[in-house]
Length: 232
Image (cartoon, rainbow, N blue to C red; front, side, top):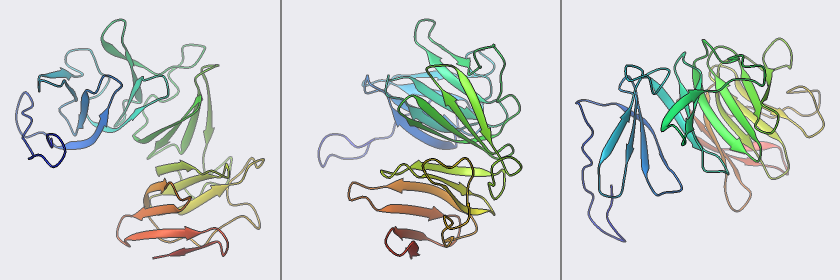
């Protein structure tokens, strides 16, 4: 952690040893969350005190946590490897499985690779079952995959909703997918783009409206909306 403006970096010790940190996030209380590959999840307060959440403690569904996201209400979402998505329940101080309105765990057995919060929807990318969209208002899920919606493949690693309401999805060995507003499927005739790489691992739209695609081995690309092409 870097202390103050221009301050020095200080080490934050976590309980245990040899933690492989996969993701970081900050909550509304300015606490730092660290997701690890096999050691669960850690929450660190301003004093540097770390609290652990793990499968063994019964406070997390799986100790391999790949991604973290804070929604507009300040809730923390944790995507796990074959343990689905866990949502922080502040009332009980522990995480709970994300389930549908009927109580069914739609994400059971899913290897979650990304969680993206946009308004009242949570976009959940998985490595084995495509994209899930969870509506926080109704607690209903919708699944988009290679069989029902034209997704290039079911290994999803990145999701972005741009300011034009396009839904972009990055695949591992499937390139890039786009669903325009009003469409019900990806990559329909006339809407596909020149894929910058076969493996898109991250997507981000910056403050100037540029869409950026980070890839597994081909570097970084910027999308030009006028030409519908990517610049490396």
